[in-house]
Amino acid sequence: MSTNARALCMIPGPVEMSDAVLAANSTPATAHTDPVFAEAFGQVLEGLRTVVGTKDGQPFVIAGSGTLGWDQAAANLIEEGEAVLVLSNGYFGEGLADCMETYGAQVTRLRAEPGQRQALAEVAQALRAKTYKAVTVSQVDTSTGVLADVKGVCEVVREQSPATLVIVDGVCATAAERLYFDAWGVDVVITASQKALGSPPGVSVVVASQRALRVVETRKTRVAAYYASWARWLPVMRAYEARAPKYFATPCVQAIFALHTSLRDILADGMEAVFDAHERTAAKVRAAVDSWGLKTVAAEPALCSNAMTAIWLPEGVQAADLLPKLKARGVVAAGGILAGLAHRYFRLGHMGISATRDNGNVDKTLAAAAAALEECGLVLKPTGRSSPPRL
Image (cartoon, rainbow, N blue to C red; front, side, top):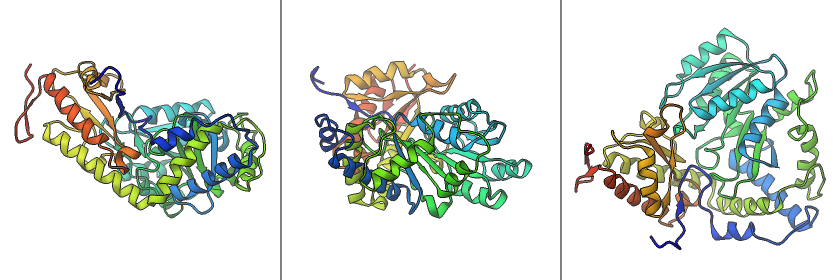
């Protein structure tokens, strides 16, 4: 690769972006009261409802990362001492549990082994044993690439504990994995701009059900946050949707312009076509992994995310060996982040335009990964099947 060439960013977010999105992110300084910005912001709020499948869910689009969405959900919905059941499938499930505890929740962690997810029977048993204010689940835990059964979790919650809120961390899932907010009975989806929504980092996106908003209205104690308080942001969101700017804190104008551009393209395709494209792309990645003789961290195909793939490395090869060789071939991938296992696997993102556009990003990535693995000692046979690595 030429030293002047830009490496593809194929980590599980931030992702590659279209030229139109990059241009929108580079617009001149614009007042947050400008009618052009108000129109764009209003369309973003409306478009996000379509992305997650809700008619009346309330989007909150605020400058920050996906982690700010955790704070929003915890600060607004959970009061001191209330019980929360966290379904943890990895690093980010544990992080969400920590966030809930920060706001006073009494957290029960229902953990899965690396590469697995909780059986629905386990979730049902936990709900029968105790009353929970909320259940949280990461639709895709970015540390493992494991896809949660959000629909199944919602069904179990509605059957066992209908008053319990369902909070979905969709940071590495929204706009890549199927989610039907109203039909499934989701109360909160948390996501961010830099993954399958296909725009730069910097925008925290949350969609809350009307039921969740009523919970905030009837709390017994004040929300223990200032910036993350929905009471402060709700009038702002409603005003921008009416194309009448209202101030609480300065919005991230250029980042919202970029998100507006990306959402326009996503919605032009239609969500079902977008989901289908991610499924096809993920299948291609898994077929390549299989051809290398390697295994995904997700223990079986039904557990594999369509947004990203975490891949166990061959014996004797560590992430620190592979990643520089990949970058030398023009692809930036990510190492693992599970404690004690991080060196044993690597992660590829394949969401956003890398899944929905015929730009060659995924093919280039897979070719580079195969070559880098060979350089690390993995023997790829002509058939595509691999023998064990040379040690």
